[in-house]
Image (tube, rainbow, N blue to C red; front, side):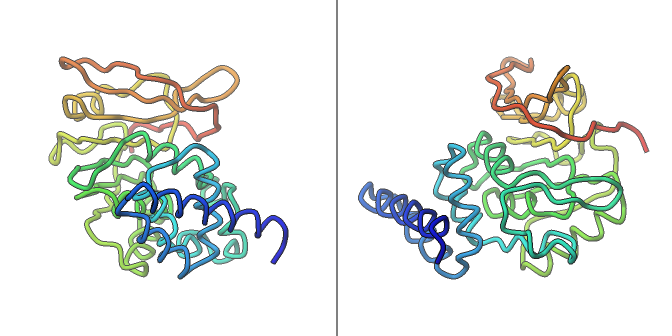
Length: 242
């Protein structure tokens, strides 16, 4: 065991023990998932270090084998907290950033969630473990096909992956209590604003001059309201249309 690995294990055990002492019912779920796959536990530690405290989300990370959601040539890097290239110049997001974005949605298990930008389906898999239903839109058909196959291989249910224009959303299943967008735009696209439920949460990167800024929004009295900025990051632009 390396010193870095040992420090990560110690931090994870401290997190689990603190949750147990607090009587959190998800402490055992996290402990069991981390024990099954110590590699995924490294991503749990990275998420916790990024500020994620929701044990349901941390347990979902521990239970989700990221190597199933990256191209085969990158499997050896699957448990590093870093982006991984996909086809068409599309990258995956850094796992700790994925966790931060999902965390802002405050999912409790009964929500309907819309995801824009499926990629290879890792974020989709985490969302599916946390929400009642997930609809995910991917612009590129071959990436959507990979995501469907990856989700099936991981035994993930409650998800539909569709090929389409993410900026247009998916009105037939609206309203959504949570919307997560994995591509940058100057503003929240009007269709997505219209499909967000009253009091729902939408997180997306907003295009900036130097970096994109991951930003959390909500809807109050029918209007989109900015809650807070999370972190600077780099995303591909949100492409509208076919």
